[in-house]
Length: 547
Image (tube, rainbow, N blue to C red; front, side, top):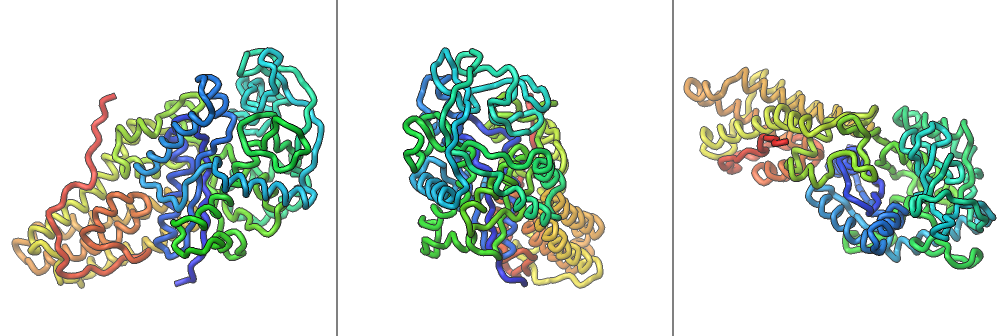
């Protein structure tokens, strides 16, 4: 067994501006949890962090529309998001917010380090001003036509259609979201991060990423070849955000959200190290991940966040010095819902809350994992989720567990029999289950989570095929000893397959573990003869939709 590795599982920070939908779940949060759970089982030291982004202009925009404070919006939706992560079994080491004193302090420290290193400077620039509202407009307060693809409703910071990040000044026919007025340009002073300082370094960095998903590395490389990295303002004329740690700009300026949000991965790691969740009690434990060349950093994001994580964040880390860069960015593509891209801001798609009303958490996790948009956009619907649950999860895995445990309970005196099978069919089944661990481990290493799920399902199907071929319910009448061997073998297979499913199905795996014992690692543990096997109840309920 190889030595444990410190693995940072860094997960995109959702805006606390509205309800999250299943596109978010499939895009970043479920894949991250599946990966983190498997890495822990494999013996690695995992730190999985994220939090709610509370400084985004979507929050301020929504607050203005509702006539409430941004903090009221944050409190409402951060609580909802945390509750849904709990319901779904997302196994954070720390889920926090960008509104903590810790995050502000570390953001300001990074700013000052980059300023001292010559990578931040002050410039006078033109920014849109709403003449009716009499205020400067941050990116999300402006919409207009994308200069790259012509999309009519591009935001001031990014086009949802082509995925390009934008500067509001570039929009064609811009309009204020506050008043609908046509904004005018006015001069204002801001701090700029000199991203252009790192164009060559990032080319070398990306050239080493031969194992990244093609759409991720090609997107990032294409960006560099098209225009290089442009210097970007990292402060704004807003009153909702982190204070600028120097006074050069005067009042009314804050550090802007897309500079500070990615720093959350570092600040959350430090917050975790200083908290009771860090069982080592060492407040510098975060350095085991961030100042350790042997660590591995895996970032789970949607494809609209690729430039921020493959280009801007590495450039910010380079500018601060001596911090570990992203090793892998397995950005997923989009989930489409009835023909349209799932979007919280545009109200397209099934919310997580609605999905949890319809489906059990493990069942929802299974169906979404089977449809993860790892290489291409994936269409999903309530009907397809229900079909996968009923025809795959319930029919293959749930029924296997239920019928084997029921037969052991009934025919083996309610306990694990001491009758290991030794026939070729018995050995072949268990060998195939054990081989699935190696197959799935390689798939997890490449963050090919759908393939790893298929490996688990293939092992479950092999166990079902073994039962159908050996027919222990008939053997019980003609050869009870052989029936006991078959049931021991089938139960041994289940004992392994439940570990293969554990990253995907934490709740039902815990139910099985309450009977067979906790797994000791990423392998099949031997059964303990005499372990009580009570009469089981079904792991999953068949879904009946009333749409």
